[in-house]
Image (cartoon, rainbow, N blue to C red; front, side, top):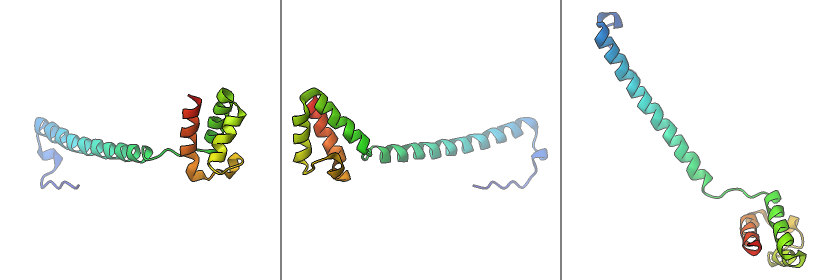
Length: 106
């Protein structure tokens, strides 16, 4: 947004100059706040869609099941996903696998 004045800043007395500058500052401050709020909303909405689960997270979830319920239960969960080992588990199933492991370990 560009503001064009037909008179120079020197033509305005001290109080009017201060009020004008304050008004301009408030306008730009509100615009900056809106830009920041939009960026925060964008990052929050994309972050809450579905967090990426890593192979390390999957491994930790399975280890928790093994620690609490034993190796046979951990392997049963893995086999229920058609995998003989963690590297056989498709990445698009990681989040679901971790959820099942957390439920089994609870």
